[in-house]
Image 1 (cartoon, helix red, strand yellow):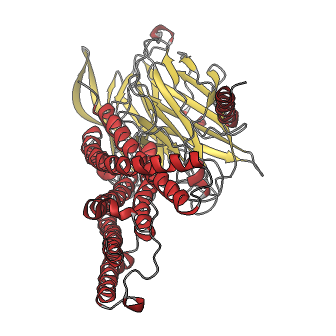
Image 2 (cartoon, each protein chain N blue to C red; image 1 turned 180 degrees about the vertical axis):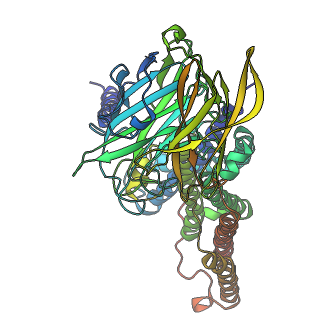
Length: 391
Length: 222
């Protein structure tokens, strides 16, 4: 055989071996494409607690969702439960992780999901929406509530927190189990969130991942960003006729930007109701407390009917938490209860503080000074050396 | 209209390609010069290759270096247009990329200045050739790191992730020195450079060993 052919054959073999090695090292799980079904039965707020044993999930879509950490089984995927009732999207993710969530300073991990409109693929893109559980950049300790973020890198906390739920991790040794459960409105009304159209056709990308060894986590070996799985979800067209009808109507928007120490003022427009009260509890209370709603005697037109504005104060919370509450309205024609929530959190830090910025500018100047000094020394050395050699 | 991110990707490819070519050409130049200095005559075919490679690698590296530095400046502009300013200002990872890019760009510009001032002669002494090569190759190493950071920014990860993870290099938190260390470096390095410059100047004024310049430096054979 000619030497050139031998060389070509050897080269082809080497390339094939490298390709085979690369492919064998990490076989990516296949992304999924699913339609989230319309189900009139909601998951109760109280059951969005990170406990997989509670909650009306039996009618939800169940699918294995590959994670962006690219890890081998059992860490590389979660079991996703999903359903929607035309207003809210309910999600539950059951997965495994290599460390427990012990403390923000000790072993801990985070679980995060990025949601994209159809035109945006990849991670940390403009226009993406995110939710993160257990990231110590956002959460100092249990209970591990969802943190609504945008798609920046690292994600920035949304001023409007629109996710209700919790994540819990259990187990005595690796692999530890975790369950994250939460709900959000299909269209939260927040321009920082992705609004989902439940039309059965519009697709949205979902990227989920865990991390136990990087920013916001610690103690494990999972790195969150190894692969990109363009998972697609669509939302089945709702069938409103299957939803229960009520004569009493409640129109209410949960408050935003509530900080520790701040009383929350709630208003609602109630139609066909003569009395109302709020039952509420925060993240650590085990029983509900009640607060009366006052009729402000302000009529509000509600599609031809007259509604009346009611208001109530909920007490200030001493520390960051999620307050879950229900408005219970009653009138001569019946009774209705609607549940809501709001997040009590310290004001989100707007990226980098001025002090950090100053420290960075000093570091940049120092690095440049170092580089310029090295170049100057080499310049002088080169001149001296070449002159010594008479060049 | 073309997505600014596409244009940014093109300029990134251009500057990375040119600067890697500069680094590769410098390596070829070093290897071929080493062969000619130490192993010349062992294989006439390899001698011919070394002579040819040495002849072409040097101008190729210089051209690629200039083109790469220009393309990097262009990519800085396209990058600032491709991402919302609010995200750039708020992201710690972007700050890391700016810091690493600034240092690597300084080293590349330093290499260009060195090459422009001393021309091909920079390769005529082993020490000066290695100085020049160290600037280009250190710049390439930093550029590789900055491209890995860029991969994270683009949300696509990086082939170096496993390596960075092993080395416990986390590209997410902002890389800063303590303020006192920054101030110390800001003062100490220029002062040290000035002292070295003075020592070199004094060495030039004094006669070399035996009254002759050169100090035993071996001369290139090519």
